[in-house]
Image (cartoon, rainbow, N blue to C red; front, top):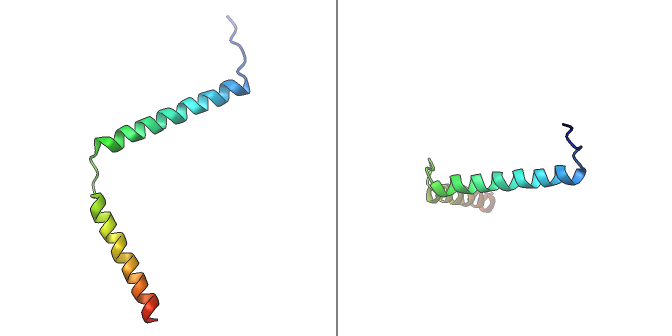
Length: 60
């Protein structure tokens, strides 16, 4: 039995399907939680860094 040659359209459709599945699995993982560092803590650290940078700019 011979297998037909894949067209560029077949290859592109396969890529789209794999991309969709990767996105779905990432969303599933994110919804499941289990994060090691809470989001609020990351936001606080970012705020401190930005305030420190602003303080350096203003006082220099």
